[in-house]
Length: 350
Image (cartoon, rainbow, N blue to C red; front, side, top):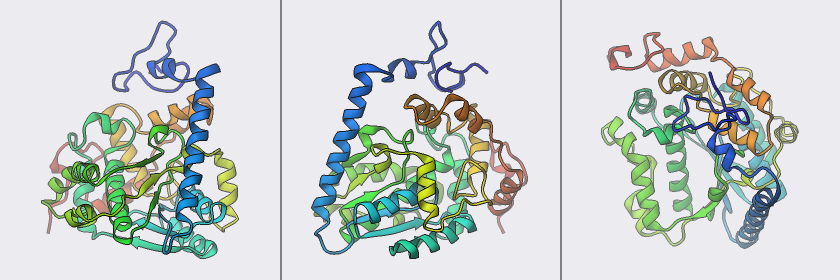
């Protein structure tokens, strides 16, 4: 398979174009050296200054200063440590339990929450509903191709639910900051700190809910802000993704959280430190779309110097773990088939 000679994007990636040298359009536009790189560095510095200004503004408020979307993985755990220890914020961590959080990740969260002395809420929707949306997410057409460039259909579903639950909690509790553990490459710098208004929130909520509502016959709304939340909101929370603009090094982050007795799970695939669905979701995406769902993220990390091209290629070559995939298929009620293109693969409902 032909790939960009600078990053790792394959010829199967939507809209990819290579020049005569084999360089993709994303690498041609990316700041590499000189003035463009300085511009990106300056943008990160401005974002960091803005974040520290927000921290100073909220630190004197009563109640929780920040709601942290915590998956139990290495990146969100490191952000939780940053918020609590480096920035001295009162943090409420919440976890969306999708029914496939690994037991090791759950144990990590229990231990880390106690060691960091942070409040922690786990939101676990009923599994029959989650099963419906996950099965729907394996079918082509639930999400537009653009949404699948950075994540699989299943991951899009989980992200929509986690964001909806988090936003509802932040609005109900009047928490000014809503933090995420997106690492560099997972989110554009322009989105690392942003705040919307009630009208924009309503539009975003409706767009995120629409495919999930269709998959569940309208049963998903309770996990998102409702009309009264958006109409009566006094101030919308800031969405912040600190790892996008802070100096981030994966080895340093893992070393830091290991001091909190966090341990790398051995019950997930090597590309995830919290979710058992990951192998299955990646496999389905690769079969249907022809490229790995991590390709765009890893390519961004290569361009920004966080990772070598060789390491990124190695990560793409990590195969799905058959035992984990089999466990997921059994729990979802799938008859062993990996090519999910019709409802015929589903077990009959009792």
